[in-house]
Structures are given as C-alpha cells and as structure tokens.
Length: 459
Image 1 (cartoon, rainbow, N blue to C red):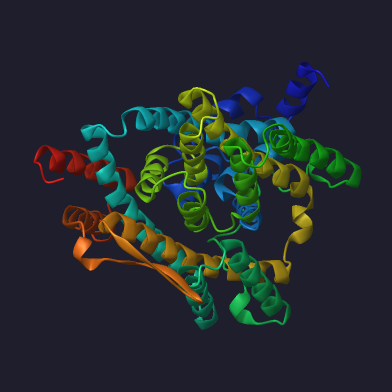
Image 2: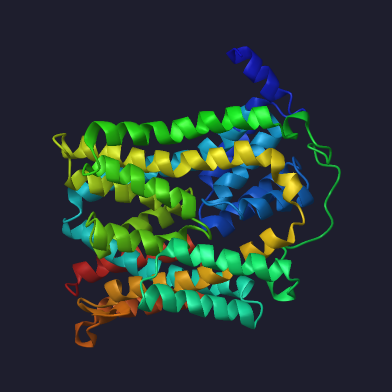
C-alpha cells in the first residue's frame, strides 16, 4: 500500500482528518504530565468532552482492557483510540506522539546529568527533586490504595505483597502472577470481593463522531492477527537477538535489551509498581546506577511529559554511559537510552494492534476482571515497598543489609538521618496532602528549596 492509500484510509475515520487528529494528539502529548491518572484525565477531557470523538462508554471500555495489559495504560489507551479511529496509522501516530516529548526531554536532561551531575548547582537541584519525588510516591500509595483496597481480601493481598517483596525479596513477576491467579480463581468461584471496580460514570453518549457501531477494521481475523503479530514481534525481538549474536550476553547493550524486554512483559499496575523491581536490579544486580541516581531519574520523569516509565530511558542511558564498549561515552549512552525505550514501548503497539480486535470478546469476563482487581491490590503493596526503599536512600546516608534466611532487606542506620532531606520531604508531603498543591508546583518548589539550601551552605 502506497503513502496516498494509507493517508486516504486514515482520513476515512469518521470525518476527522488525519491532520486534525495529528494536532489533537500532539496537544494531548504535550499536556501529559501527572502520571497515568493525569494523562487519562487529559485524554478524557479533550477526546470525550471537548472534541466528542468517542463516547464515555467506549472510552472507559478501552481503558478497562488497557489496564489488563502490561505496560503504561495511558500510552496504550492513546494507541487504542488512535487505532480505533484511524486504523494502524492512527494508532502509530497517537501512541508515538504520546511518548515523543518525553523521549526528547529525558534525553536532554540525561545529557546534562551525565555531563554536569557533580556540579554544585545541579546536585542541589536534584536534592530538592528527590524530596518531592518521595512525597509523590507516598501519595501514589494512598491514591491507588483508596481505589483498590475495597475489602479485607484486597487489603490482605496488598499486605502479603509488601511483606513478600520487602522482607523476603520475592521477585515482582512472581507476586503479579500469584495475585492474578488468586483473583482469577476467586472471580470464577463467584466471590464478590474480586469484582472489578468501575471507573466512574454516567451513561455512555451515543452521539460521538465514532458512534457505537463496530468499524470494519475492528473485526478480528486469524490471518491478520498472525501477520501483524509477526511484524511487531520482529520489530521488537530481532534487534535483541542481533545484539546477543553480535556482542554476547556480557555486553551492556545485550543486557539492556534483555532486561527491559522482560520488563515489558511484567509491567502490570503502572510505573510505580515496576520501578521497585527495576531499581533493585539496576542498582544492586547490574550496578548500572547508584540509589540516589535512580531517584534523580524518577524526578526527571516526573517533571517531563509522557509516561513515568520513561525513567527506563535514563537507566539505559547511564548504564551505557558507564560501560561504553569502545564507543564515546555520550554516543554509547544515547544508543543505550534509545534501546531501552525501543524494547519498552514496541511491545505496547504489539498488544494493541494484535489484541484490540479481540477486546470486545473479553467484555464481561469475570475471571479476567477478578485477576485485574487482585493484581491492582498487590500493586499497592509493591508501591509501598518502593516508597520505603526510596525513603531509606533519600533520608539516610547509611543502610544495613539483613541477609538471614529467609529474610533479605535493608534497614536504616538511624544516626545517619539526613535532616535537611527529612524536613524538605515533610514539607513536600504537607504541600501535597494538606494544601492539595499540584505536582509541578511541588517539584518546582522543592528544586528551588534545594538550591537555596546549597547557597545557604546547609547541604
């Protein structure tokens, strides 16, 4: 199919031109701050309320099933709606634009961090960022917990997940799989505790531009699924296999490709959930970063548009920067960051383009709804582990590792508490919880406070 045919096919989407769609999706991408909750809210306001492209019911239906998939649900939701309205070209445009501003911003900040990270002003800036990020992660525990922990069984699942990952270092994928199995079985037995919570409400509008009919390209087909699946599996895995064959498993590029490909398969529950696992592996197993650098990267992702999981680009950047394999450090770092981004997000398009035509067949499936509810509850415990892990490395200069079978965890050295960091974190938390200040306001204020503390000689 030539370029003109693709353009004509895409423009056939319900009277909305491809050019107009491009402008709207670019606007969505540039406003996608605040994590998945804020990003989904932006899409809902623009696509449902302002443009009336898609009805409330179809928007929420798409969101429900994007939450069943690994990966960032907001980016997948954008891809799904773009595909629904303008076929494959629309999905590529919407999903690609959603992450493009973040790719550019994180790469630029990574260059600055690698080149000037030890400069006093930059250190002070990131000192403030880490305090705000800690407060934001704690707020995420509260926010997700209110939605997910609706009964005693969900609370028990969250507590069990926290104990397993914090005290016994049980791998994150095992926790997710176990929670999913429990939820699936519970729902199949008809236990009401595992019923999936809704996303809010009202009756679905039926006068949207998309309407409620099923477009022709939405109808599933085995031949199409095989062709599309083979294409996107090749785009995802061929570079990984080529790196392994050419460089071997010891190469940092092979390690980045393999590790982040695995992350793409288990990133259920949003970025906060998987970052606990990523941080532990990147810091303690691969030694790509130091604990405070992981916090710095998370601070970058919080202050830039796009999914929070874009922090993985920073991890890949720093990993290759420190092990350039004969290349110049900045070139290696650029390639490492882009490689991490490629293997993280390419599978997201695979899940949508192959699975979206079958999504209607999953509607109302009790077992899958129960699995999602249980996974979401377990994610609360994992996020709590992440907040404590961040707190240990933000508020204390020293920690002690406990390795007494079966226990395996870190505990703080209380005499090493960082008083300025503690006070700044408390201030940031107060701004978020008590005064309901926005994320960007808190981050900017914390950065300014960090610089002020350095100028005053406190840090």
